[in-house]
Image 1 (cartoon, rainbow, N blue to C red):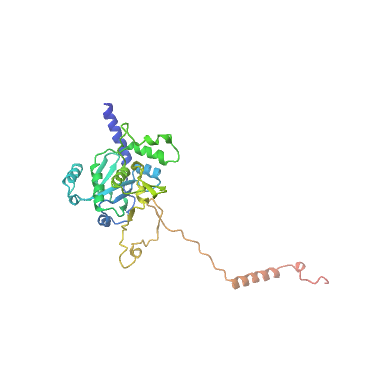
Image 2 (cartoon, rainbow, N blue to C red):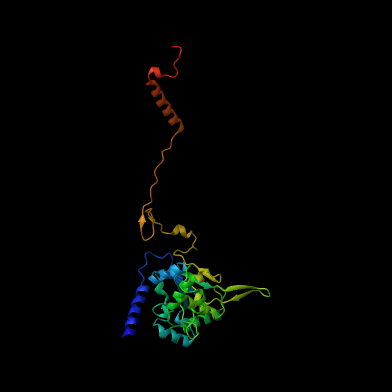
Length: 315
């Protein structure tokens, strides 16, 4: 009874956290181009609109609140075991483009790429990784399907990244360990970081100076990664896919369907007319001088004779 009540309350909380309102505006990119630009092994960064996305955005100080790994289509896999694992988690056609992500309510799950059609997405492509290592990274992520989302790790990251501490810093060595000493399940970023770390591919490694070799490189704890780290990493290339093709002869910014109304966007879907500047009257020097001279003569003409300062005092 108590357990079922706990499960219901937990699911209600998850639904409240992950609910996303509709996109307030059209995304400034071409999703059809994205589908042909993307390659297996690319990391997708997503700008979410849910409540938990707002929490992650506040913690990380970055617009990227979610990360996913693109694995390709079912027909791209020759290993029957891998195909069986994928089919056990999702029912799709062989040509459906798929991503692996870690979700609060589902854990490590597989999702069609089209699910994020109305989201702002950035593609981060690992530079120089070999096809064999990329195959191992994708297989590692696929075999992690079904692992639960680690909500506790999200709370632990808050303690590390916020300027104030909830728990003493000396407890940091035990925050990401279970009572058995084994690593816990992770969040979206840590799952992808673990997959790349399995082939020694760097994301944001720690570089230590050493006298003999010059430097020594250490892999970073995968549980400390956030989505923005793939954006900052010098080992990932950012792939662009604008709404209009910049390779056509006429400059793409000349081909944009700019509005002819003259309205300005003020965010939150508000359009306003630009404020008109007051017209300044140009003052012509000669005309102004003539007007001032005329006014001075009229003023002197109406002065009484006794107030004439130019009158001869001897008279």
